[in-house]
Image (cartoon, rainbow, N blue to C red):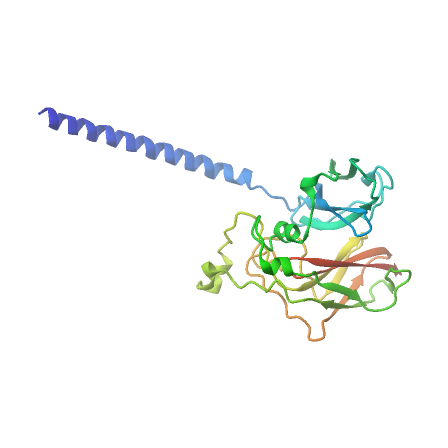
Length: 326
């Protein structure tokens, strides 16, 4: 009798405990589901820009380069912030070659600012005010901010976080050479509103890192299901493969590119035409290495176009000043 009573009491206790666990689990799950829209809230427009200090490297002449990027909190809105009280560096010259046209979302290793060899422990600050919010990035020569090729490949998602490989260490950045005349090292072009400007760009690369194929988890799925299956990763992931992308760096008028350009920013959405997007595959490389892009401007003004040749791990940039007349 005692043993039967014990088992009966134990069974009742177990059912009660399981019921409480289930209730607690359901409550926790419900709270999590309710919180998800807030935690994962994103915006198409109306948000601000976060300037970002990426790190530094030492140049062959003993000077140092501070590398900056930014995070535009918007998924669609491309913000224009002219050099001045809303977009400046200090101390020294407010214009250090930073962008005034900001593409959506996270843009890493966008530009560099060279400082003298005797910079020491001073601080260089980049301040941007957009949509009523002011943010500042501070650059120093702190040892934990040293950047090299492996750091770049890791931070942009070409490598797994904190990893490297013989291939990544052997990789050499592609070279981008815009064809045509240069004036004092600058590339300047003139064109009229509505008149296509042809940019011919030679891109040379060592073929590393080798393009990565579709993950084995997705390879066996029906293509329609793959489109609905987001990638699983603990950090940003990027598909390796050579591409060239031209975009507006400075200038406020609408600019159209033909063919449409691959996004150099971290658009992780499926089929986003971005190396960070699921199912993206590198485009075919021209046999002669020459990329041809037509650019059309809708408004007069002076523009800076930014070209980036990217092999997945490393990159090389070129800039073109375009003077657009009526």
